[in-house]
Amino acid sequence: MLERDHSCSSSIRCPIQARPRHAEQYQEDRQPRRPRRRSQQAQDHPAIFNELCKMLDPGKPSFTPKKGKTSVVMFVGLQGSGKTTTCTKYAYYHQKKGWRPALVCADTFRAGAFDQLKQNATKAKIPFYGSYTESDPVKIAVEGVETFKKENCDLIIVDTSGRHKQEAALFEEMRQVSEATKPDLVIFVMDSSIGQAAFDQAQAFKQSVSVGAVIVTKMDGHAKGGGALSAVAATKSPVIFIGTGEHMDEFEVFDVKPFVSRLLGMGDWSGFMDKIHEVVPMDQQPELLQKLSEGNFTLRIMYEQFQNILKMGPINQVFSMLPGFSAELMPKGREKESSAKIKRYMTMMDSMTNEELDSTNPKLMNESRMMRIARGSGRQVREVMEMLEEYKRLAKIWSKMKGLKIPKKGEMSALSRNMNAQHMSKVLPPQMLKQIGGMGGLQNLMKQMGSTKDMMGMFGGGDK
Ligand SMILES: Nc1nc2c(ncn2[C@@H]2O[C@H](COP(=O)(O)OP(=O)(O)OP(=O)(O)O)[C@@H](O)[C@H]2O)c(=O)[nH]1
Image 1 (tube, rainbow, N blue to C red):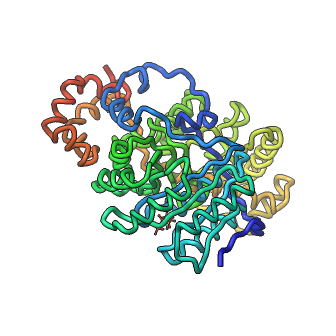
Image 2 (image 1 turned 180 degrees about the vertical axis):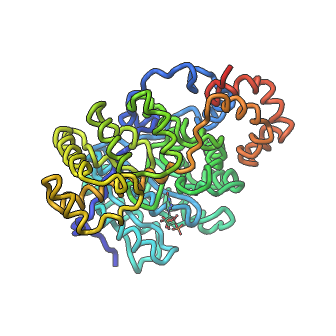
C-alpha cells in the first residue's frame, strides 16, 4: 500500500539561515562583498587557487528550478553518500524560501530508507510519498510525481537507492526511474571523503542518467572534498550545495573560494576574516583572532562582543560565517528587541564575579549564584538561565574555531615557499593528476603558472 502524508503533525522546526555562498543560480543568498584589499585573493591573481576554482566551474550553470513552476529533481549517488538526508535538506532549503516541495522515496533497496525520509519530512512538514510494500521503484516514483504534480507542488524531489557502478542491474533500474519521471535535474550526491573513486563513479552515473549538478556531503568531517574536482570533470556539472552536518539546516549554497581554500589547507575562513575586518574595531582584531584560535569562549568575551554589537551593528554577520551558526541572537527586522535583550544580558553579567566572567565552565554558576546575579541585576533567575544558554550556544560555535591558524606577518611567504608540486599532488584527486600528466605534468603546469610569485599571492601577498 502506498502511503503519503500531508498533515505532518510534528512542530519541530529547524531554523535555517542560509549563509552567504555564491553559486550563480543562488544569487539571492549572496551578501554584498566589500571591495577586496590588495592583500586579498582576488587582486593577487593566485594562479593555483584560480586554476582550482576554474576546475570547479564546468562553464555553465545547472538547471535551476523556478518557484511556482513544477520541477522534478532526482537524487542519485553511491550507498551512504547522504542522498536521503540531502533530499530533505534541499526540500527544506526551498520550503524556507516559500516553495512547495514534496519528497518521493523511490529507494526500495535499503530497508529503513522510507522511514528515514518519512521522519525527516515529517519534522520539516514536507509532504512525502512512499511505500513499505511496493518493491518497484519506478512505480513508486511515477505515482509520487503524478500525485504531487496534481497538488501543484513546485519542487518534486525523488530519492533513489544508493548504488555503485559495478551494479549493472541497479544502474538499469535508476535509468528506468529517470526515464519514467523525466526529471528536470538529476543531482549526483557525493561524500566528501570518496577520494580516488570519484571520477569513475561520477562518470558511470553520468553515462546512465543525465546528471546536471553535484552536491558534496559531509564537509563537516576531515575530508577536504578533493573528489569534487573529479566529479565536476566527469559530469561536466557544477557543485551547487554542500552538506555540513547531519541536521536539516546544515546545508550551504556552494561557494567556490572557501571550498578551494579548504582544499589547499588554508581553512574555510577567507570570508570569515573579511567579516572580522569589517565589523570588529581594528585595535581589537588581533586579540579576538587570538582568542578564536584558542577556542576558549568566556562570558567576558561574550560581554565584549555584545559591546561591539551595540556599537557597531550586527556582529552576527561575523558568526554567521561559521558552520552551524544560526543568527538567532539578532534576527533581521527585530534589531531593537535584540539590542534590548543584549543590554539585559550585559546588566546581568555586570553582577558576576571576575572568576565567573573569565571561566569557560558555566557549571560554576550554581543556583544560588544565579539567584544572586538575578537579584543584583534586578532580573529573573529564568533570564539569567536564558543568558547562560545563549553563552553555551555561542561557546559551542566558538569551539569550532579552535586551532584556527592565523598566519602572522612574515609567515605568509614562508608558507608560500613551502607550497610546491608535492603539496599540489596531494591536493589534486589522483584521476585529475593523471589527466594533467602526473607529477611531471604538474611541475610543468606550475612552472607555466609562475608558481612561486603567484602562490605568494594566493596566500595573501606575503611580506614583500
Ligand atoms: N556529518 C554529516 N553526516 C551526513 C551528512 N549528510 C549525510 N550524513 C549522514 O550520512 C549517513 C548516510 O546518509 P543517508 O542520507 O542515509 O545516505 P543515503 O545516500 O541515502 O544512503 P543509501 O540510501 O544507503 O544509499 C547518515 O548517517 C547521515 O546522517 C553531512 O553533511 N554531514
